[in-house]
Amino acid sequence: MSELTESEKKILEAAKKVFETQGYSGARMQQIADEAGISKASLHYYFRSKENLFERIFDETMSDFMELVSTWNDDSEHWEDKLRRFICEFFVFLKTRSLLFIIGEINRNPDLLVNRRKKSKPKAKFITYFENLQEVGKMKTSNMYVVYIFMHSLCAYPILNARMFQMTTGMNNHDYEQFMNNYPNIVADLLINALKRGLN
Amino acid sequence: MSELTESEKKILEAAKKVFETQGYSGARMQQIADEAGISKASLHYYFRSKENLFERIFDETMSDFMELVSTWNDDSEHWEDKLRRFICEFFVFLKTRSLLFIIGEINRNPDLLVNRRKKSKPKAKFITYFENLQEVGKMKTSNMYVVYIFMHSLCAYPILNARMFQMTTGMNNHDYEQFMNNYPNIVADLLINALKRGLN
DNA sequence: ACATTTGCTGACCATTTGGTCAAACCATTT
DNA sequence: AAATGGTTTGACCAAATGGTCAGCAAATGT
Image 1 (cartoon, rainbow over the protein chains, first blue to last red):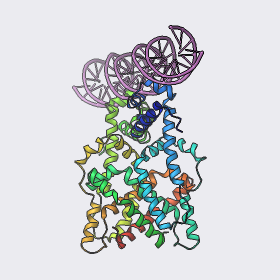
Image 2: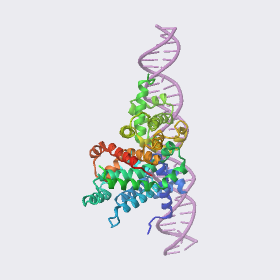
Image 3: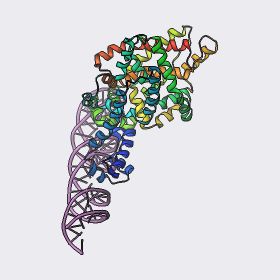
Image 4: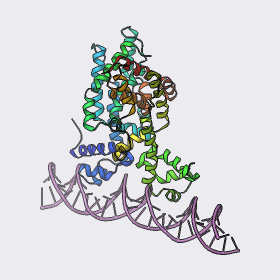
């Protein structure tokens, strides 16, 4: 199925690691080659340029995020359970992808988003789902854009900013991870409660 | 009072702009010189090295953040008003500093935090303030670490991630700014409500 | 008027870095 | 065994980049 050779896989894995930690400007082709255990010339044999390789990595991670954002299957599950499950999955997802990399690169070069804008849906399914539920009268009135942003912020930022939070709260790495174990459920509680109560 | 010459001010301003948008690796000494309207040689005349100039900029912004985090004057104002006012001020503050720059550079080189750890307070005043209020029985039981992280996340992330939120919600730049006008108050409402209700 | 310090710069340097290329290597085919 | 075609690399190149330095110019001191 996968049309990638062993070398290509190694390169992409190495490139991902280096780009995500160093950013485009900070990444070095030699470092990627070393990490992949091949020569720099081989790197250029498979991927013409740094720009080329970067786009490959960026697009892949970006696609993952976009897919997640637009994933919201409209089955019969009750919205509370659905939301809680989504938040837990969202959190796990965020821990394994470098969102900081994406945000940082977009900040450096906003065109990275402009090029993608065409492909993506105009409005996150999450928002329309809850707006519909609201119209049917199954839920108090809330601005679902706010709920959407709240959910993303509460899930993403504690991961993005983990190091600084560890410092300002006095927790060490282990404490913080422990602390984060139950965190998604607290977020779910808060949002479910806010939705039930209504948020304007 | 200010012991900086006109040239030094221009350089620092230019360096801040360039470092914050491009990061350390992406920043070019020539670009900083151009932005400041002087020669590259003059840049090195005032600040020995890129590293040196970077530290100056980073430390300044970092200090601003650390000061804000530890700012929580324990006056007689009611905690609800105090919290709401703080959130509004926090939000304005975040809009004028590049938090993404700080987080990105820390991610690239965690030592930047390790060196600072000594100077900073072990625990944010915010947390102890509300923990005390709780003990006196003026408030339901909540994990104040959670409240602390909630507040930071809800304020910072919508600014950090503005571009992607604009895309996934279908708002343009103007709409989003409009939307953000009342946002701090919604955050305050949510947190005050959560604290009154109790959060575990 | 002369000397000295200070601010500033063009020209230059050493190193780094993305990228190229001819040649070697290796598995498969003929 | 020779030819073939894909893979890999050391050696090399040109441009970019952080940094240096002798010297100029303008203020400042004597």
